[in-house]
Length: 314
Image 1 (cartoon, rainbow, N blue to C red):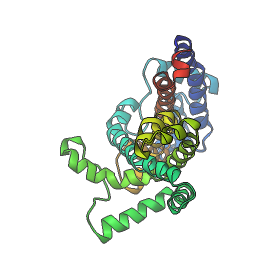
Image 2: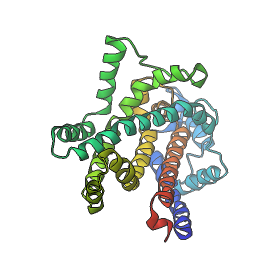
Image 3: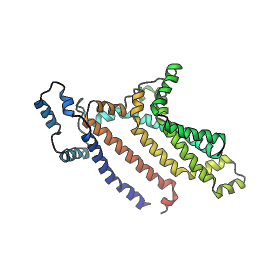
Image 4: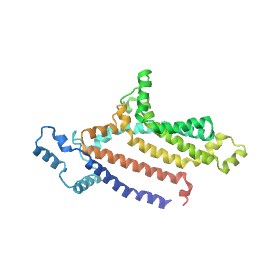
């Protein structure tokens, strides 16, 4: 167990090195010149060169990378080119709606997907199984933004029962927050609901076909007890894996959702930064998103210590 823990912790170091290189390389190779955008349409070449020198954009790429990496290791992500505010402060000011939206989307996905997957496995080959399987395929094929616009039309325009834009903040109360995140959380978690449903169904079918399940049925245990006591425990590993990956995906995939529902989160911040060619802000958002994704996957791996006895006693 200790060896597994140390190995997983040490594996983060090279991964984060690759992450920083990829994040910096993508922003460096992206088209456009931040100095030209910042200087404006009527700036002289001398003014543009002065801005480029001030932002260290005239240095060789390796020099720029190590200068940026050194600042990152000190906790300094730089300042936004346009607002001139610290990048980390800008991100932290937008992180609340993004985290709440990702958590809500994950909860919606799990609460819908796990019962559907277990139902399909229990009724394998029946009408319920076919309907759930169809949903599992259609859910991953339908674009998320289409689901969002349908939800807006149905519940925001037609019925007028749900807010379709903005985020009130936690100070407005839990009920108001829930009303504002329910539709975007459903949009964000729709594809992941279909994926988790398929994983749950496949894992449950494998477990329910084992000999010890037949023995449990022969002893007279009802199906609910078999599923809750035996099946869920054995499918915990693939479920924890896919749910953890889904949560990380939702944190990084909020750009479209926050744009459709006009939520002032990290996704909208990234869109604005790309439109203004705000290189430090783009790098900061991408870096923090990547770090969070890696850390969530690490937590998923570490959770196996508690749910997988093969690792616990190795």
